[in-house]
Length: 258
Image 1: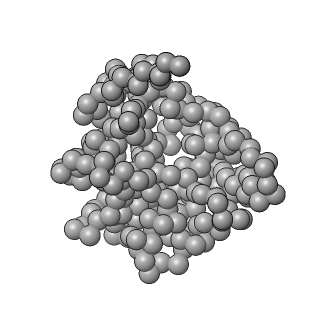
Image 2 (image 1 turned 90 degrees about the vertical axis):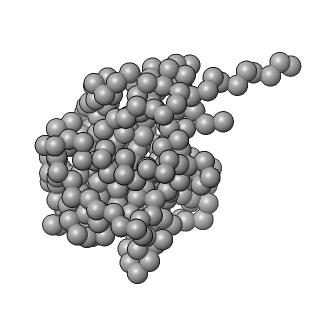
């Protein structure tokens, strides 16, 4: 049973007009022009309940742009030992053209306050490989932090705090370094009163934007969102948007009695 943001992503991506609605959402702020175009060959994940799997870039990327060699570079940058290890999942990933270049729109979706996680990356010391991967990820995020600090020296992403936000910003930076324009969209689903047992649902756009601004404080200045940035002449956009849910989450399953 799906509840919260995962349900709302699958509800939406399974709709026949999802792509059109998604493009309208990207263009919903007239003061922020994001030059994203899609073709009939568009690829995106997930695609509703029929194909609910989320994307990992080292496998999704080659499906979109198979002639590119950078996908293995991306995984090598993040992981030292690949067997049994994974890169982050993306709630929505979509191929597109950005400024007439092959690019990606990447989405991190939230539906209630407790999905805005501030914890660091859990440390798994069960094997030497896990420890070395933990160190490699920390090094990758630190490298990305230095890159973002060229835009604003108040950026302070790390492996050990706000890990989910940190890895999203780190991958955005690295993709740009590899030549791929990126739109990183934080998406708040509003109005899901069925998940009050999990956390406080976002009531409307204002509630979402206020919660998101508070969440990123101390990690990245909120005024970097809604703007175009460049790394080595490759553009990236950081956006925060919201949309009402299609349907509220079902109630939690009752606990089985012993």
